[in-house]
Length: 351
Ligand SMILES: Cc1cc2nc3c(=O)[nH]c(=O)nc-3n(C[C@H](O)[C@H](O)[C@H](O)COP(=O)(O)O)c2cc1C
Image (cartoon, rainbow, N blue to C red):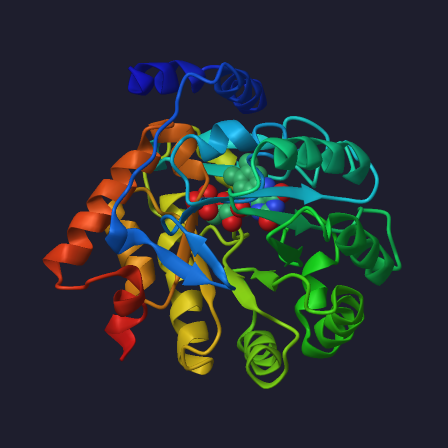
């Protein structure tokens, strides 16, 4: 049924179909839990009932935390939220490529700002203290003193989040990815760490287009200091190499500016995951995201070093029950390969 709805939704504006999806979720019709002991993950003193999370960007204003949690996710990440409300880039800014179950978008952190966002998260917290919720923070487009934005956001989210993600990898905010340079990031994280006082795990989300030297710099910070508690690999890519020579009906779409997500991102984000796991020698918890659309893909990310995984684009194409399908297949694959739990499988292909 969702397959037909999804094909129909390809005919309407992607942003309209996203808000219809959010409204559908608000009806609260789905409440799924996938229980299997081999999927439990212990990280940052927390127990994740399973390793599959909702990636940032789906619930930018923290409007549907209960409903997305009820799809069966082990954790959800909300945001990216900025200090002040912002509209993002001019429309159209989201382009679906159904033949490859992919999306290109340049939304540009459109969101209602931290004030409304934090009210939504507090309301959720009053109902449920157990679910694991990460908050992904970013700078406003016009901000020059970006440290100030991240610091204020951290302070406002401290009591609400289970972990914070410092997003420095969206391709749609000019200059943002420059903060991936070692000295800039080190200085930002130092400021955040003083304010955080080890209250929350601080994670950094990285671009798949990052240079080797910047990636090595970030890994050095992660291994040699206690400023980074985990890395999220990866955000969307500005590269179109994986779509070259592929059949695409509306081929003009691949020339649109923005970040590409979905299966064409899978190999590239896996390369970065693999490199990071090798450089950090498995000492830093990694969240793998980019192009997962099956339990097999999820298992691949875990075998390349991810302790947790996230999805976004496949939810658009495959619908809400994909969460359950991925978890069922992942649990089966762990057993098939002789692993008692996720932990035993993390990075096994690289050992
Ligand atoms: C429409 C859309 C909006 C996104 N917005 C954000 C965002 O606000 N912050 C962020 O860190 N990542 C954002 N992402 C990136 C995703 O969190 C994820 O890293 C990326 O899409 C790769 O995963 P996927 O292939 O499963 O979609 C967005 C992705 C999409 C498709």
